[in-house]
Amino acid sequence: MADMKLDDWNQRWIDNRIGWHRGEVNQTLEKYFPSGERSSTFFPLCGKTLDMIWVAQKGCQVRGAEFSQLAIDQFFEENKIANKSENGFIHSTESSFDIALKQGDFFEYPDDHKFELIFDRGSMVAVNPKDREKYAQKIKTLLKSDGKVLLQAISRDEEHLKNGPPFHLTIDDVKNSYEKIGMKVNVLGSYDDRSSIDRLGVIKINEIQISF
Ligand SMILES: C[S@@+](CC[C@H](N)C(=O)[O-])C[C@H]1O[C@@H](n2cnc3c(N)ncnc32)[C@H](O)[C@@H]1O
Image (cartoon, rainbow, N blue to C red; front, side, top):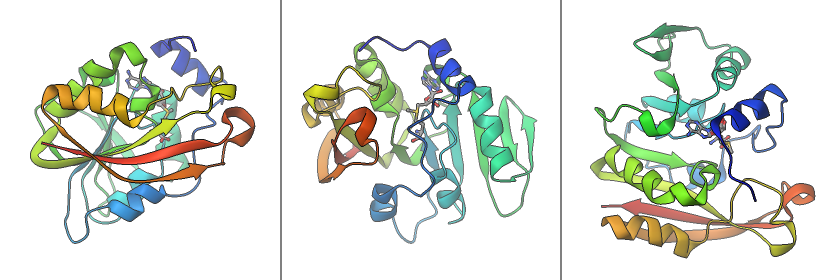
């Protein structure tokens, strides 16, 4: 599978080739979202995921990084969330929500604010494999010392490997990236996903928690 450049991602949005986007809330997020806490939550490589709304509706602060301006525009338009541009973020202006998304390269996202939860679905698996260590390092700088990363890693079957991203990301790959920088990796569960069966075949989703 060839490396993806930022312009390739942008082109995906222009061509509306966004097969990863889901019309429902992610089941791993629903299952493992910390109850009773008003966590500030970060979505790296956020796209226009509806998961951000689900978390914001719980009264949590939501921040996201996305390279494609089109994705950010679609997120606010399609969900009819009033917004304004402020300090380099597109910010919701509705009192019931606190969502702000930053257009740009995730690796340049400001790390002056740390988060209790980082939800990683479609993010680490979208990063070129050679950049995984750099990615893990950046995630580490954005996580509070008692915070947690909730990650969906994806094991792909051989037959469909040429189609992608997502890149094949095994539990060992995750361990290699995060344990090397002193983080703990715990597998919470796993399930088979058939939602992209034509393009990707059956994919195995490993639900992983990462912490200090
Ligand atoms: C596979 S999609 C997943 C989006 C979202 N997490 C979801 O689950 O729907 C990856 C997204 O990351 C964006 N992206 C890729 N590389 C990026 C980077 N270095 N910085 C910011 N966004 C990036 C792409 O434009 C795309 O919207």
